[in-house]
Figure (tube, rainbow, N blue to C red):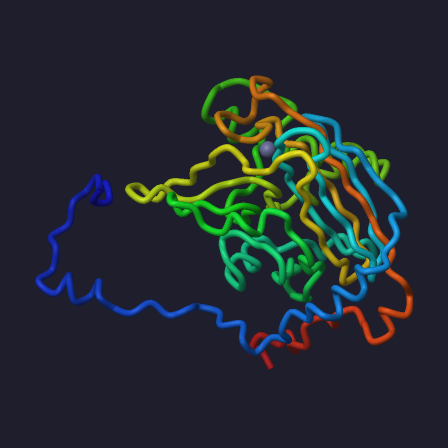
Length: 289
Ligand SMILES: [Zn+2]
């Protein structure tokens, strides 16, 4: 389908030639240290579970993960999408940068990809070390799992599009979860809420209109995605009111399930060579001398 244009423009005679320009990957990542599968596999080999947090359906919970520990987000009952926020536990101004993670890796992330932090630090906050849905890949609709393209369902967009108030969107669930963790009001916590990793969510862009679409999550009971915390992390997770996001969100219509966050401590000697990543070394002069 042609792009819908409200004010049509004349197609130039060399339109075909312009469209044939070759795409290049915007951010080649070959210069980054490669995913050290042997290191992470050794560390996760003898790990022991130290804490777990249950996130009730249509609600959110915060959790902490010490740097050098692993954490898993698990589907303990039925198919369920989760919206994840991450902060540097020592400095909430450093938080997960969904947009740059997308630019550096892909629209959807899996084992070996890193979750990057915001400017000016821009460093890995967590590395994905296992994903039971890695088999899914890209389907016939171009969709994948664990997206960094959606933002999070929120009551403002819902009000804009439906005229109704709904209080259990992921944005609100995350706001309440962080507020409870920090012992502050949800309104104070809200500015810390940011674009998420949509755990277990299956999404893509429609081929004809390039609109964001979702389809039933392929996650089933027991599926999980596992991360290595590259720094001390504060996390918040919302069990999306969309459930498996097969039909709707931002309402109480979908069947919803809990999510589980498990934190694991590896055997200490496996981390002997590990150091938390350094913050970006950019001078921050921005050309101003
Ligand atoms: Zn949601």
